[in-house]
Length: 251
Image (cartoon, rainbow, N blue to C red; front, side, top):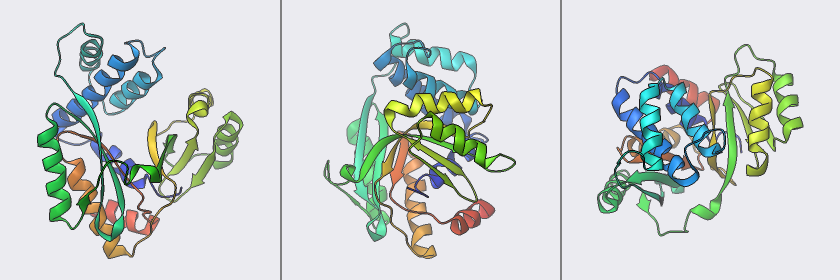
């Protein structure tokens, strides 16, 4: 599993300080609204909503914005009609992609996704062509600087974590959906801070490319993430710590 989420984790870190806060807050607000619509407006009961609210707080989204997004989801405030859609496709070199969007216009969004993939050497695939390569799991990322790795490993595994991967840039923890809440709570109780905590689509197998090809695919992912309707982009690309360090240095 190692390496699948490094790109998305770095993008998350950048988003927290991005100058385009309005765009970021719109995405986060939509995620909160959808979670509240599906499971109710109480984060203590609706775990998906709690994850979305925590993500918004980590990006310094104002409390009023969060509360309005919840009320739009519960119907207390009128909001836009949004549909959740996952598009499947391939980046160059056969890298599998899942593009999760929230949109009020499916025709516009699918055209945008197809245009980016086509222009950059990829293709849009039929439903089911790519999704079978991924599995939904709980995912937590922790910055490795100044932390006790043995303690993190012990706490996570004892709480039910499936895997803990230690990298130069990030410590990644994976858990089955049934164990994810317990793992997350155990880390919180132990005073361990995490950079990312979410339900994610994890590739069952990853694909490694040479540096040039890796950077090319990262460019495709970045272009897809820049679309207004995009919430998440997942791939089976395994990005090495070396390439990721070069990307961070150049960003």
